[in-house]
Amino acid sequence: MNSNTDKITEITYFRRILHQYPELSGNEKKTSQQIKDYIQRFNPDKIIENVGGYGLLVVFEGKKHGKTVMFRADMDALPIQEESNIPYKSKNINIAHLCGHDGHIAILANTIRMFSEDRPHKGTAVFLFQPAEETGEGAIKVLSDNNFIIPDYIFGIHNIPGFAENQILLKSGAFAAASKGMIIKLFGKTSHASEPEKGISPALAMAELITFFDSLNANKATFNDMVLTTVVHARLGDIAFGTSPGYAEVMITLRAFSDNDMEWLIRNSTEKIHEITSEHRIDYNIHFVEEFPSTENNPECIEMLISVAKNNNSNLFLLEKPFKWSEDFGHYTKNIPGALIGIGSGIDQPNLHNPDFDFPDTIIQDAGQYLYTIYKFINE
Image (tube, rainbow, N blue to C red; front, top):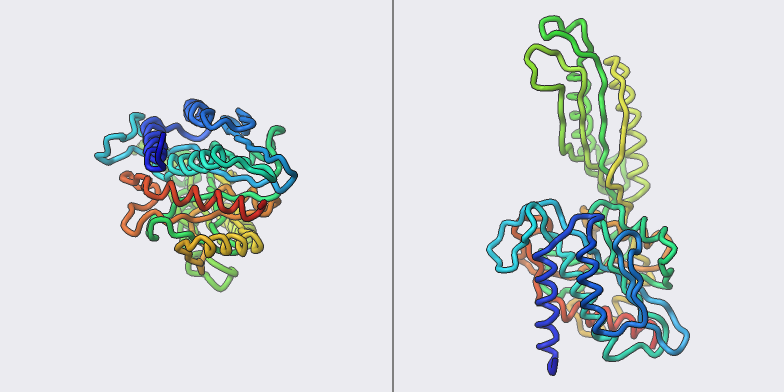
């Protein structure tokens, strides 16, 4: 490759290959191998495989002691059928990179290329390709893996539609909301539909629970900041016109900008569930899935990122409010100074998780350059 344009064309091609062969959370085996095969050409000092599942750590070591700076990209795709006419459309049925994780991988690959051409003189650069972000499990598994390298700083990236391409989006404190999936199972007693009084139907309890969770969204005075509850699924009994139902299930997504509000929301909800089920003589259990903490950006790291953006004459935008969506990057920033960085991916870009979303290759170069400059700012 003789020009920077050729190099970006190569990385764009790599990104589009990833887009064609997406894999779901926890199943990123081929994706991991594709990344490894591509990264090896840049001669890193070390590649550590199978971190927290199919995760990879790519390491460049400077000759002098300095700070260890980690950059993280996610690898997994979504269980959604892609609806687009792009020539590199997903070949895997009902699986697609509709959140841009293929693009995040390409950004880190481009930054790795920069390090291969100008290897660090001081400190250690570590690139983490993380599995299972979409389910909230990946970061926890990576952090508990004995091969994980604990850095001095960690920075993540996420493309964000609705903002100008290559705009750097920063916010101190809460950047993305905490969220949990709550599953409530209600156990009553079936009876013949002609004699419902001989059974215990969970129908009314189910209806009251749905009404309660909907009412929480209007009860803003109870919380310090944004709280949102969304009923995503409900099921009552089976399709049997001769039987009064004995079982029901309600699934709710709970969101809050702060972990404290999330804790209060769970405590308050649990008390109300107990109250409603007791009134209707219904047994119940509660189960949580896809648990994401609030992503809290370190204030000192944000000041550093602002300085880098200004030094680069980047298009910088300081956010006033966190995003309502969630990211498992918050598990890292609970104990490691760092920040999740938003990269604008286009004013008219389809929203994340939409069936026609496609990551814009035009942001790969500038985003990679920004990460490269962050490392230089810290260590040189």
